[in-house]
Image (cartoon, rainbow, N blue to C red):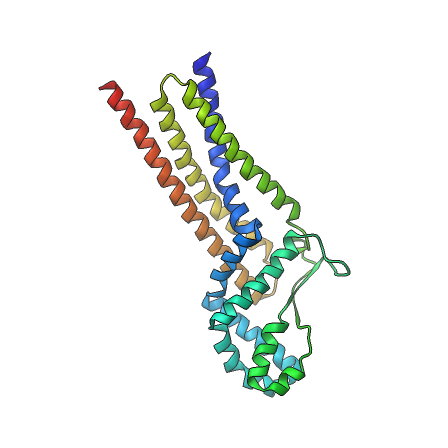
Length: 271
């Protein structure tokens, strides 16, 4: 009976470990605003993102202050998007998108039309080109990102985000409790320790493979957006998956060490 309970506790612990890694990563890097801001910093340092934003800023100035203003502002926009100030401003813009997707729809706004407020960026560049240009752009400068795209509706991921957080912290608690119980009641603790280490390795493998599925699914979600916006989104998705793979390597490495330690203890006991 004791062996059966230890086996069941071990299986539950391994299953919880496998679930904990990807769900905790989603919580910390995607759902939580602070984690997403860290991701946005990396996005703002990407050359493709900077080029796209320079084009967008120039286009908005040209649309509002005339083509000549856009031509004059272009080199300033490029210089601005390659500065530290841009990275900070870009994080604020990316945070707008995060709030749109993970918080309730704002009052008086069409929830099916996502727009980003680029007023600060556009006016900053316009005023550097010519203060008079900024006067022609009172704002707000709202740039549409999606139109009638269910994948980008306001508040679309609020409930899934909450569920992922519950799953992440719940699976961690289950993994700890079940793992400790399995070690306490197991007749062969070294072997059980090895199995728990294997759970860490398995979690890393599942998360690594799941990253590719996440990327394919996420890119499909934004496939209907404008080409430039879609490219920025794909850059972001690739960066997120790379970060998940880094987490997987760390967890897999720890799991492998625990597995080897368990095997070594078992071998020593037999010797």
